Image 1 (cartoon, rainbow, N blue to C red):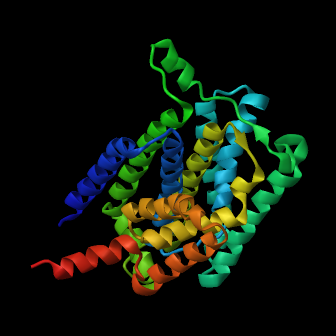
Image 2: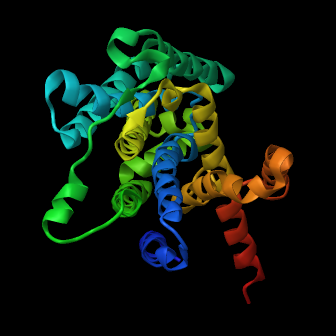
Length: 319
């Protein structure tokens, strides 16, 4: 299967899932879970570009989600900006911060890079948490409505908030997948993937390693920021937890679990870590134990992640 057909098949698979999944939803609660899956999947796609394509590790990516979320909370209140403009503003601020900070920290490698990105994420979290006069501190703050639901009502279309955000997040997910898949087989994408194998080899063939790593970092920061903005606008409330360390770990786990180099894997990983806890609640106190056990088994027996590993096994078993 060539690159174009893989891209088309992935986009079609995502589109079919988004369109047909509501048939199985017994209540509006499942629309909300679906929206959270798509939002987390978008953030994980950004890490696919950084981790899967460029081979760089980030343990502080939730910080950019926090910037996107609080842009939608602070922009309308202090600057009088419409929510959609605030989404773009948050993405621009995140991209700029990633560009400025990425230059020095992306010189680091392996665990040194992981610790540096962890420090960046913690710093963003501390600013959001401690500057209560601006962000509301640990108590959080309300976020203005996007206004789409009221607009639809004006045209006689009645939808719940969960349904509306399911479709909005689904469309944004498809757009993010389209960009990531096109990047994969572009000249820039091939240059990024060469870094994953060997930065030394990439530099010997004329690739500007520092510039390409910085490009991947900026792109992934924008993805995380847009995802954070969606969470804030959907919940109509935001707290510093959106930028917390555990959220960074969750995003990275989603990426690795589904397949770090797979766009579809990002959605699969997001689905597992978002939906599976809802299923495992019947086990009460053993919920986290079972979730951890499932993740360990996947990493032991499917080391490349679910999607790449299963795809390889299917190709081997095909006649």
